[in-house]
Amino acid sequence: MTAVTAYDPRRTLTIGVELVRQLRRRRTMVAFGIAIALPLIVVAAVKLGPESSSGGGGGFGDGDLDLVGLATSGAWNFALTMLFFSSGFLLVIIAAMFLGDSVASEASWSTLRYLLAAPVPRRRLLRAKAIVGLLLTAISLAILVVASWIIGALAFGTAPLSSPLAGTWDVPESATRIAVIAGYIGLTMLIPAGVAFLMSVLTDVPLGAVGAAVVIVIVLNILDAIDALGDLRRLLPTDYGNAWVDALGPTIVWDQMAIGASYSVITFAILVTIAVLRFDRKDITS
Image 1: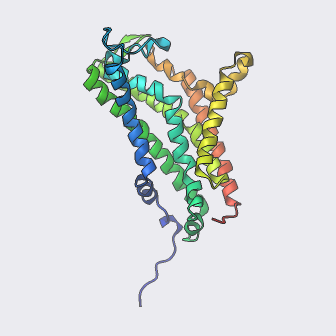
Image 2 (image 1 turned 90 degrees about the horizontal axis):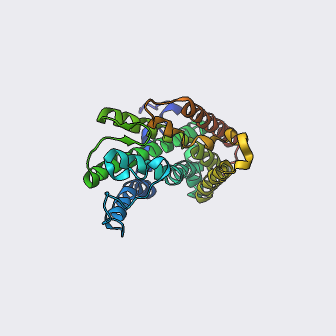
């Protein structure tokens, strides 16, 4: 007689299986491709733009703290500028896409009930979806940084990071500062990720979940820009989105980044908890 293996919920829908499933999807490859395409487009605009022949390695104008103006000084500054460009919108969309598409896509394909009938415990399903979504977001961020550095090195050389607040650092310190900034930006992406994940549980329309997360983040940013709100803006988690600038001083100041990271983690935890409790009671019909 053939031995029957006892059912073990821990062996259903592992992180590795879900990661492979999501890596094979076209939208994942498109997100990774966009992370590579952005620095290529920016370099092409600088090199081929009408101001490219005006001297100074240019094409860029001065930005806040002159970060943008320093972009062409070397690969490290170019990578920093790409993080600056992408943190406000591109990475928000990517995080919202990976988390907002997680559960809603299964419902829209009518495969969600079959996954749960496997049987995959509901909370295990959500855990796998959330972890893989965060992993893919982190991979996209890493691809953006690495691709920006390589493309920046080919276009502008490998000069170390120059800060408008603290002069120029050596290569190890440049790598440390970029790692801190990228890590903090990654943590701030937990807010759109959490909103998108909750919406993915509440709706069967993936685009609706992604769009809702992006719109909510945009509204929070608009509120944060209203001076009349005064100190009330400090209660908004998005108010600390640019706290990574404190990593560009002579020494890294962690105060604001610690608050911003705490806001992001706590907000994500609350949103995911609501999503789990809602999914536990949801009538799965698709």
